[in-house]
Amino acid sequence: SSRASAVLGALDIPTTLTELPGVYDGDWKGSGEVFQSICPTTGEVLANVKSASPAELHGALERTREAYVYLRSVPAPRRGEIIRQIREALAAKREELGALVSLEMGKIRSEGVGEVQEFVDICDYAVGLSRIMNGRVINSERPGHTILEVPNPLGVLGVLSAFNFPVAVYGWNLSISMAAGNATIWKPSPSTPLCSIAVTKIVSSVLEKNGIPGAVAGLVTGGKDVGEALVQSREVDMISFTGSENVGRVVGKNVQSRFGKVLLELGGNNAAIVMPDADLSLAVPAVFFGSVGTAGQRCTSTRRLYLHRSIAPEFLSRLQKLYASLKPGDPLDPSTLLGPLHTPVALDIYNGAITELKAAGADILAGGGRYDGLPSPLNQGNFVRPTIAIPKSGTSSALWATERFAPVLYVAEFDELEQAIAWNNAVPQGLSSSLWTRDMRNVGRWIGPTGSDAGIVNVNVGTSGAEIGAAFGGNKASRPTSIFSTGWGRESGGDAWKQYVRWSACTINFSDEAPLAQGVNFTP
Ligand code: UN1
Image 1 (cartoon, protein in one colour):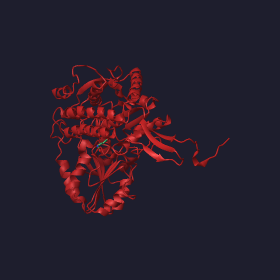
Image 2 (cartoon, helix red, strand yellow):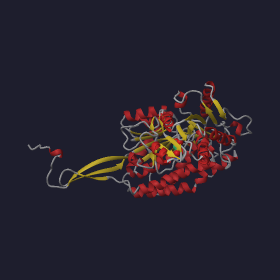
Image 3 (spheres, helix red, strand yellow):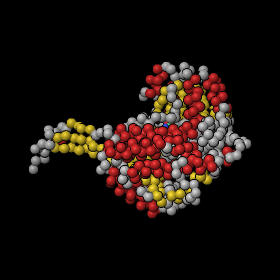
Image 4 (cartoon, rainbow, N blue to C red):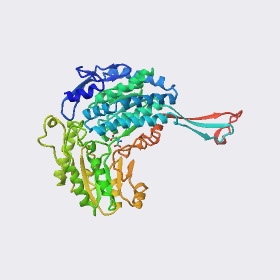
């Protein structure tokens, strides 16, 4: 359609080719299985993308290793300068790339552009980082000795990214990994190949201009087999995977079994808790964005809402009004707030959740099914009505404990904060959480040892939409602890960079004696 051609043309993605090469390792290629990019709004095929054949994947891994050997000797601030140029190149295409995210993934325009902004922001962060990835000097117990803790480049990073953030999450990894001196090979979601091709074109144009091997930021589109090959390859020193708990469990086990490093960003089942003293004029719109934004397809989306009994009726009537105002539309249209779900698989997840709620006799306060009679071509899209439900089952049932990647919000009422915190923590996942209150005593309880056990613990801020500066990630099933990961098991800001390097403890003897530690005597 002309709608699609305009978006693709602005990013120099040819619309006349029947098949696009989906592999980049310094050169564009692709002779493996063909994947279709399908527009979730209209159902039209946007492009056919040729993925990596086993031989191409093997070749790409070799070139990525060579690229790492090159990059590790480039001084970190010089690597930062390349990242600065990547930042500029991305910012110059912010609107165009944002529109492609909306076209191919289905999130609304401002969120698509926001995703590119998130990549730009993390590049800024990584540029600064390239001058402050400092090791440490440690006091030695031996005279004339010094101990250094030295971070060095790690090797090759494999990034397995999800459909819901087809640009930003790769950005978190690429920028910090490149600052750290690693080469990165990217296996995006098979349903968002165009976003990865467009990003790789922008990044590689900067690399080429600077005479840096393109395989520093390689791309291998493909399906499960390509992902598995990366996970199993000893050529890949670290895997950063974003996706479901089930796949994450398999990825984690496989990478650990070969003693690789693994960084997992898995599900979220995030709760917002609203206290009686909360400012509802802030809390209601925040819960609305958290549960309906990105059509409920963020890891950080609000899925559980715990309302203090005294404000519950007022809160729900305001929230229902906002839900009632929603109109599904083309995410490219700047006035649209509700785009489609990404794929028919996501529709099944939504339908499954609704069926389950109805079978359990839940009260459905909003939504509860698909839209009827949408005008063409939206009737070919994956649109669903965002749903609010009060399940009849107790708050500890399986229904509450399961992440449904769709705009379905479960509601329950509580009397005491302790009860709400217990419910918040009672699920296997622990990614994000949000408390609404103006009482600082509640804040203290919420962020302290008896508070939320999630990786993101917000106050008067919704569960989704984190900035890049803080470490992003979860606890429990959202990010199973890996003993092979130094650092927090986090991406983006904070101390996340410490995972993308290998650490050496270097004890150096400047003296004319060679004493042993702990005073051990071994004189022959
Ligand atoms: C994700 O949902 O996979 O905090 C990432 C947020 C975004 C990133 C979400 N900055 O919602």
